[in-house]
Image (tube, rainbow, N blue to C red; front, side, top):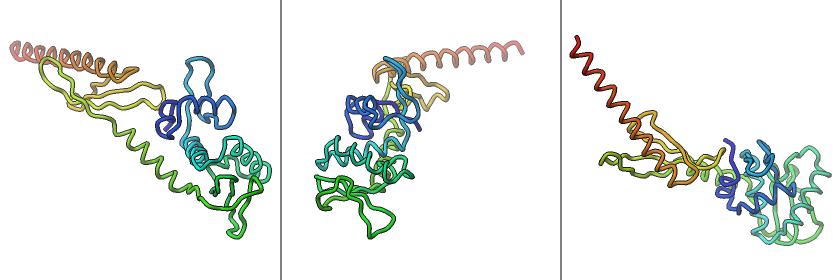
Length: 214
C-alpha cells in the first residue's frame, strides 16, 4: 500500500505540518511519489512509515530533531551499507544521545558520543503497531443511509492514496462512490444507491415485458 500525507499523519501520530516539514527539509521524504506543486499528492511507503514512527519515538524520549539528523548523518557516513537507518537499525537512547545496536552484540555505537543507555526503541514492536494501525484503517466504518424509505448499510474507507473517502453498499454488489469528506461520500453513495435501484427497476420491467411478449 501507499499512503498520502493525511493517512501518514493519522497512522504515525504526527501532525500534517510535521510530515510536510520533514519532506521539505529532506528529513524523511516520500519514496513513492514526491509533491510536484501546490495541491499535488505525496505518497509514502510502509518503510517510510517505519522511519517516521522511529523518529517520533526518539522525539517522545526527549531527543531533538537536530540530534536525530546528526545521528543519521553519522550512521550514513560510517555504515554506508545501511540506506535508511531509521527503518533498518535498532536504537537506544537516554534522552540525551542516540545509541545503535550492531550485529556484534558487544558493540554499541554512540552516534552523539555521550550519555548512558536507558530506553530501547524496539523496531519490531513499531512494525507490528503500524500493521495494526493499517489493518484498522482498512476495515472502514459502518453507516446507514436511507433511500426511498429503506435503510442500507454502507462501509466507508479512507483513500490512503488519493485522499478523501470511498464508500460501498455491500447489499448492492458493485454499488460504490467516493467523496472528499465523510459527508460528501455518504451523500454520493445515496445517489449511487438511487441510481442502482433505478437500473434494477428498469431491468425488472424489461423482464416482465419479455414474459408477456412470449
